[in-house]
Image (cartoon, rainbow, N blue to C red; front, side, top):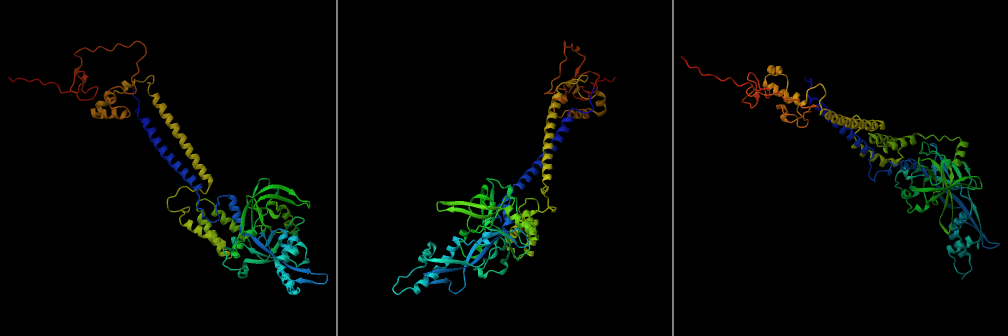
Length: 563
């Protein structure tokens, strides 16, 4: 009995399906490779903002335009007592010596409210300030002494006078006028400045502190909030200083005096960024919580922000303890919770303004890796440049995104593009799909192997392979003709060697011998079968060869003698 389908049908189906699955698997793997390469894209070192893929770097870049340099001026008067009856006050013009001190601060609202250290806007009248005044007045005092000395007396120098004032050899009194402060935007906001000196700076890059809103003196918590007449400014949010722990790494932004290697405004107003490490959390005798830190903290950084990893202010640079025997010294930050109390007392609105929202969003898109982010960031930077002409620091970002956008393939482009990677879930689905396809490939391969192994033993109730390979019934041969019969036999077993179609047993699947004694083959009586031209033995009355299907040879003709 013959099966409807031939033995070669199932393996061919498996192979076709296997090829389709292999091609699909390779396509999915290519897409995964594209997704991974897109996610791991890196950029040249010249990219504005540095390594903005680092969230800490990105947070500092966003916060930096909100940090300002504060110059505080204190008018000083020095009265020198040359004798019990001879005293003089300097400067003798009646004016004051302008003692200029520098510090840092941060906009914490969009409405001109700046957080700084109290000693930055209200310098304590201590020994260091007295020595500063002595230095400024020493030249005038030396001139006065030399002009009023007896003839033939030796002349004194300003250095000698300064030493005498600092040591108390020249008795003196120090008096100071109220301090005034001016806030200067950094080049992180204004961009590079072309002014040759501070007198040439445009008025819109600085503003005077119009009033001190609230302060806690240096003997208490050393924090202050001052106000300037600027609106819709960059700002930084206050963070939770209670979350700060030992060994945490913080970032400070400020204007250290040792960094002033030039008198050009563009250099003096360029901020410095330093990493510091939390050493300890302590409390002063006045009850102020301070954060002890190690790292590069210098004069001029006072009042500047200490940012956590997400870019919020968790501390304000306050003071340092150092000595001639300790070159490194120890620095302290006032915890942000001290400033939070002032903010709450003043009922300040610290919600980011329109500028800060636009800047944060544009920078986040600039640092992203999603499809179309260059076009999006370029448009956002362009709007900021148009709406805030003073914010010239946006220029390099705008130029860079314009260059990148020219080579970026945006979504919904007419060109063929790979699947969008803007949604991480899509990438995960593609990955899962590829894994499923690979598993199906393995299952199909195993199924094909087991199926072929199962074909090696005949199923009970069916003829042996050697018998089944003899071809279709004779009735089919007689209907189709010998050529069609051979063609059908060849198509039935394409995976076996060519001898199978001619009645030979399959090379890989020998016929199975039945168990028990071997049956006696039927006897073949000589003369019963006759050889045909095809080389096979057939019955005399056969019309076609039972082996190859060749037609029977014509019967021999007998010659007839005509009478």
